[in-house]
Length: 114
Image 1 (tube, one colour):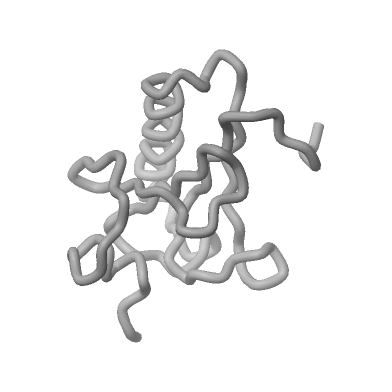
Image 2 (cartoon, rainbow, N blue to C red):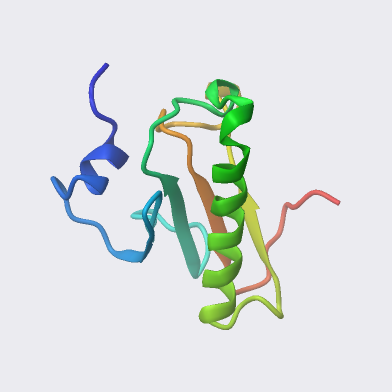
């Protein structure tokens, strides 16, 4: 299996606008933003899709959510609101097969789900 574009970012083989990094997560601005704030939160250990994440990695999934929450608070969008999205497989809109979560905000978002 070849390295995903995210693994190349994690390994500093290609540049990215990194806004957060911990031992197991990296976050960087999306190159084609869909909102004023559009940041991708990516685990450093690769799982191709959400379907591939074992129960033993539940803590890592929680860390992704909490990293997004902390970042939203740090840039001042938490009180107005934001969206987090994780796509799974092609019909779910996933285009990079290394799980990741999108944080979108900074303006009112349309097309959401109740």
